[in-house]
Image 1: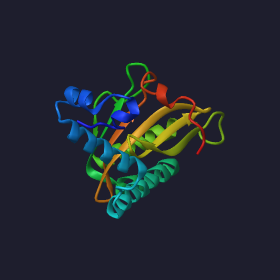
Image 2: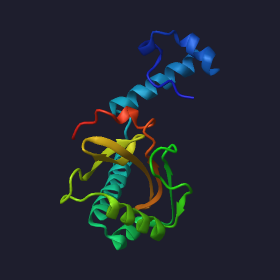
Image 3: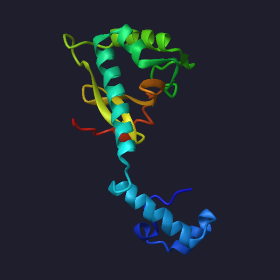
Length: 180
């Protein structure tokens, strides 16, 4: 369990938080201090920062390959055993079962890109690189409205997992997204 911002932020005594979490007040204080260091960036190790930058480069490559509809480039960025899952909430179009395998995912992504209006048509799909669940991700907007949010698992420079959310209910927190 984590105490994300510490008891002082929520104005609850550490003893009360400790009771809820089943930990000692001292342990809760330590968790809060650790969380503050992470939020402030003081605890970020250079290796961790480099790892995030590496993942961001891979996600940027996926974005560029998707926009270019380049299957070969996508296959090169996807692990052969990669898995993509999607949540459309029964409202938005999404795969019903996981798509398995880098080549199959690449083909699916390019097929979806082919269905998205291009710059020559009205309301093109715009991909933005954004932080999603604390890591590099992509957000797809049409006419300024978020349609899709994708999060990526990256290992050894290749995408191993793609989690796609298209469910409008789950995309509510992304409403009002502004250009970077």
